[in-house]
Image (tube, rainbow, N blue to C red; front, top):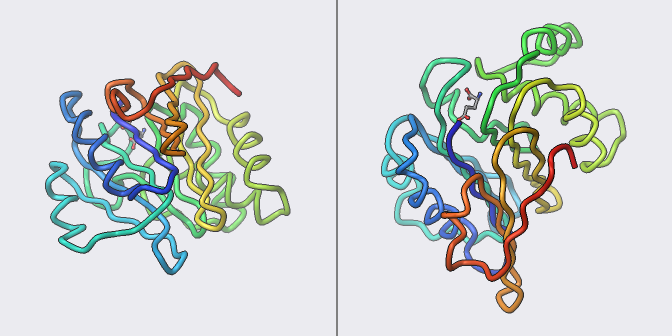
Length: 212
Ligand code: GLU
């Protein structure tokens, strides 16, 4: 179980999330990644095995302007440590990061593959992404899809999900740490698995309950 940071607000979300991930490095991790909506309203994903610096190098010197970004440092539980298995996991327009484990992922994966879903990674996380995406294709809203997909999975996890179409970020958890924070004058909201990522950046903290 490693680190999550998400940010929505007028500031440069990518910078805020990378700064948050730096603060979570002390927890240990094997890979890191971010996804965000670029200036052309496209979902962009950057992820890299190894140190956070590898991800920063991959992002390069270009300034990415974005109002919504999610980021992750991974401690692999399902699937080897490589770029593909790094988070976020994405299928346009949805992008997902997870801390924790989906215990019934094998059964769900088999069901989704039976329905024609093509998986890219070996992770349990991608099963949650697939549930959300297929539920949205069936006509449900982003909110309904996240909440009904969450009800189908077993195990302790925190998820943060970015909708690349709307720029919305949703967070949901069961038995795993998650903290939200806002800064009213800066009109920004953040979410993380660790309050340390939010310290000094927000002026209010909220600790969400399980399953809501
Ligand atoms: N179970 C997920 C994976 O192996 C998330 C691990 C984590 O908490 O970083 O990719």
